[in-house]
Image (tube, rainbow, N blue to C red; front, side):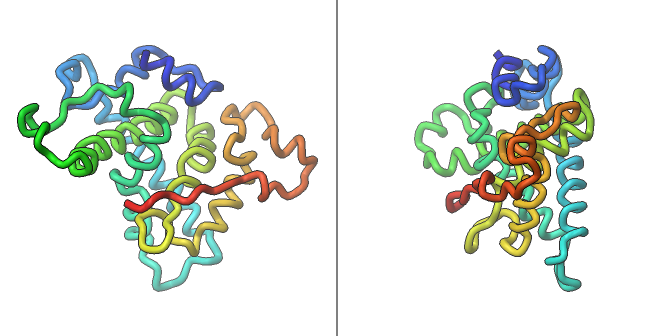
Length: 215
């Protein structure tokens, strides 16, 4: 089930059964005694932070007064990753985790609160674990492509929402285009299909960066 879900998300990548199980098992679940995603999440968090730092530091829109650390923290906030990437990837349907609230209290709790302090946090950790697993199993080049085509374009801030500030949205479009767009190939041995079809033409119109909903 775990490997099947991840393989459906990333058809070009074939996740080993054990790796997929670890990625989608949170430390709060009883089965965590056989392995969980904390280590992969730690690795993935640092991998995607490094990729975002590289993008920002090379951006012509970066100002001397900008706080890189704050921008990265705001963009890659665990709850933002969980709500917008984790939900998009359907991780909540397959993850193994145990809510912190007891069953009797959970029944009386506000549903939005439950999702905010529980599900989104765990999904965010799982997103980082997916990235850590991809980096470990398939290499940095593949993880880099996944980040710029399947993650960053979906966490762009609008108005006062959390996510990447609007000043850097053009950089995200550009990076996504270089990797073939939102559905660009993840296997580095294959040329970007979109770029091949357009024969070198600008493919900005092919990339539809979606607006994230209010938090």
